[in-house]
Image (cartoon, rainbow, N blue to C red):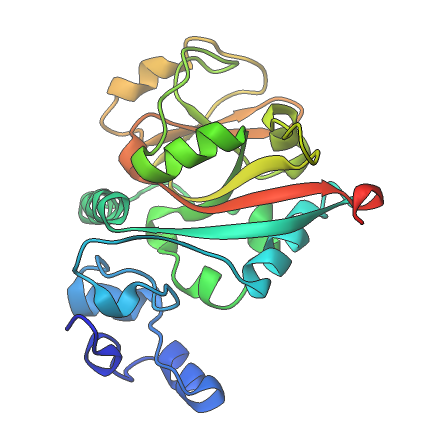
Length: 257
């Protein structure tokens, strides 16, 4: 029920039992959410979770998400750190995302589980709320502050072309994503999104570019592609497979004051 955390999140799974004991809160893992409501409810750690299913859009900061973002970033960019991180809690985007995730779950994913590099830095609720059965992962996307704000309200627009044709591109390597991140003129901060992406059935391409790979967008057995160049590039065609959860503002440690 909106506004009543005990009714939204009863103590009923391992994750929830641990959190209840250690932190005095209830929080589901993904299997529990699927059993309860097909996992259409927002993650337990969202500020807006107890108001669901009311409409909401919140931008929430916090030290934990800043630390998590820095940990992911510094695997490949050790001299940079996240100075601000906002979690986007948007009811409309979440509803579209979970509906598509449930659709892929019902279709069943037959390809092998894909584990991006980001998985090594994701812990606790950020990991336990992922549906690994449909290859739900955390991926990075470098962008501008203006674009990030627009994406947080209305999601992505597919690019017109790239190494693997049209689509929405992500990486699991911050060094790759920072190539596309735009700096703010006032403080040199760059912007990178950390997104939930449900990859579903992944088509792994031979190493090298394939600018016609978007032909797989019409293949019912392919939900995303994994292209291999000097890094791994993940491409999806349906924006409802993406939830842009975090906006990370980051800069070189030497420029921090």
